Image (cartoon, rainbow, N blue to C red):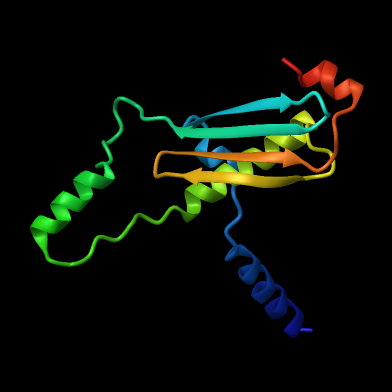
Length: 141
């Protein structure tokens, strides 16, 4: 009987190590937009953009070229690009939530292009299904 609580603790601690995105952690830290484009042949395209919001009282993050310049002055080491993994996950999460809330791509999408920078990112895609009359009425601008 004493093995079950230990096993439960081990399982819970293993699960807590996963990096799950909690949207509340970055409320007010970014702005995003979702632009739809339905073509005459029923092709459904979209562009999702996200940008970090810089508050006036926040500590200014040095731009990449400023980081390179200061690093070059300090040492002869090679410049290392910033780790964009967490920011990329936030953008992907924002896109998936937006698509789920709008219902734009009901059968999923194919990613056409992606551009991720330290303070902004965009993902362009094409829905796997064609546009219905309802889609055209709802999303066509």
